[in-house]
Image (cartoon, rainbow, N blue to C red; front, side, top):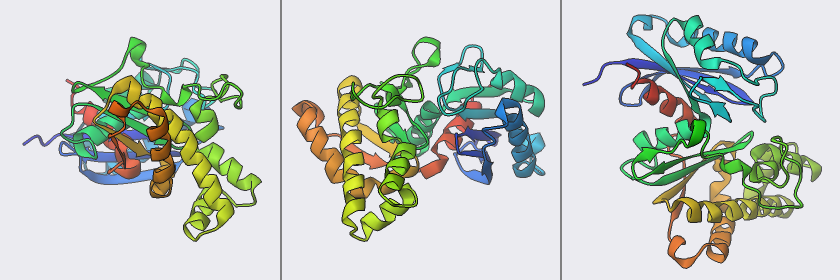
Length: 300
């Protein structure tokens, strides 16, 4: 049995998480903190180091490497972040090498959607399958794809940015600078903004009231499901997965949205693509952590 331990770090626009995991994908220790977005990359790296010191007490000699799940786009070949829509100020930051120096261990950097897809593929809802699409609906919308039993990376490791499909040419400007992106319309952040405009405190409040039968909240959730359904139908055509897995904060409302999502898939997907299951991420908000830590297991 493989007794190696690795560190997983999940960098989000809202929260920063770190955990120590074993080779079976089990979390031994976990800690989280609000991401210091305003402080920029150096402050966030300092947060990563502090979280490591918290979760690694007594285990430092057993931890062989770290995997970092980060929003994209990323230059994986050089271990750098690019112009991250959800984290301003990170242009061309050498995250991999900076963190490796601070932690004194090898570090692998991966796109957060791809890392989460890996976690769900190895240990979650996609275990045992050869083809899957993972979509996270959170601060932004990201994704990862497994095709024929391989994680898809593409040129410079930038494949799978599913949140930046244009689904409405007359839609709002997205954080990436484009117009009408799935992320710019249907991310959890934008759902929360829409909820506040309709008198709810935030998106979680709207979902809670939708569960209780509030008609205005139910209408908001139905609209979110409609937009996600448009995007999901396109993803089925692009990648022909065995399953489509939904993670991120808004996946907690997937049961409320399923009828609406399925309606759009049945309307816009070709018949041969309609029988694909849409399921929640089994690992919840730990998908990226677990997937990144698993990738670190492969560091020589």
